[in-house]
Length: 566
Image (tube, rainbow, N blue to C red; front, side, top):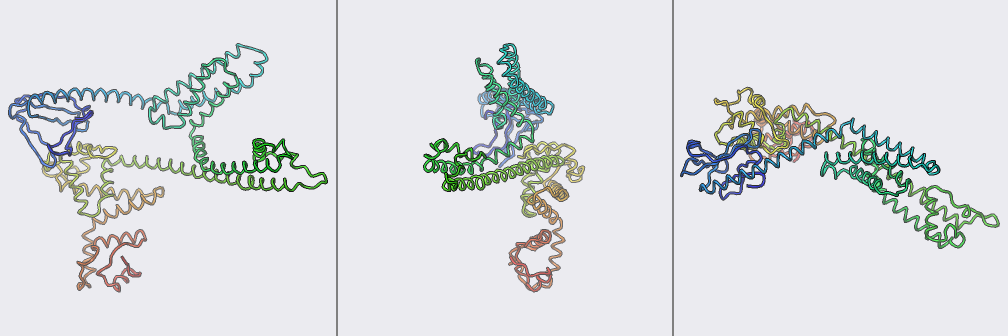
């Protein structure tokens, strides 16, 4: 027994045969021998053990489960070696199941509240209202900035307190918005979103600045103006642009670093060569660095640098430095910076658009998948099986999982309950109408109205064939080549398997002129080689097949091309 489940296994065997979630136990207690009248309980696994629960005068523990839970409403009967162990086991089950139900209830209440609040907070009207309040705050900040100098000269304290009250009102509103956002997305979704962290930083800084007295009006208004940047995280198109810029700036930083080194080298050279002649511009390293930085930003060279000599000639030493610096910064490094920034921005935008398109396609695929509840199982089978015998083996293993009591028949209730226990995400939910559709209203069932191993395999083969044909009809240009090839190949496997007898007949007629050859030494069967030939004709690819046993003079003219090789 763990914190959340009660697990079952045979003695001296580490493999689990079943388990009961403790939160799904609806009732548990002790039954006397007369209450169950010798009911027998069994578990299916590597071996099947059945023990009489009315033996040796021992008590029997019964455990009832939820109808819609993991165990589908089954009642379990347990019996230990002594009544003392039965009492301790029952007490542990009752205490742990009660604690698990409380945890589940509190967790469900929290999750339901989070889900509803998240839907409300992310709705379009609420987000539009938040954007309107942010814009109003920015408009008030602009008006306050316009009137700052007028108020400072007039010395009106009432106007100053009005701006403070408005600022506190906006800060409290944004603080409430941040609290709702944090509760609706707590914990990982909130912390992993950079825009939420940016909102928290701006709002908490504004709150601290509003609570600390004696701060300058200019600092408050500057921070208030920064709140408008939160709009960038509220509108999708702005968010896309900012995210693409953030991704594009990373490779640009390397070019900026090289440009900074070039400017620093130019500053060192100008101080050592022109420092004595132009001390006001190149006297020290910091002065020379600032001068060259402004020149790089587009400012003209200082007038003293461009002056001619006393006899009217150009100072070629200074002009050579200016030419080299201008060519290196303006014509090379800045152009490279713009090119790298634009190229990475376009690549990031395209990648984000592609990811959004793939997410939309995945959502559409999930919606289509819900039309057939068995599609996760059918997709797994169509993807993994290699030949007819392998498919039969896989279907038989699945049937053993569905037939818990090893009775040799699976009814509607047992089929629907067992399908939910298969490890698929989301779980397979099958109803009675789905079972009727699977069995063609009972035509594929046995005399007892249940699916035996052979009936189950026949029904599933029909489902896989219909699934493959439906996938072929859903191929569109929006799907990737990998999905296209997989669906075509998987569908061809199923269609081909239905025509195995026809292909065998064709192979027998075709091999009639070559009875003298030893076909037992062929490296590939006729069926596999014929399938690969069909795939080659459809995909226009060289099939990896062996033609050993065929005379090249006969095989080549049949295909109308050169003989195929392995």
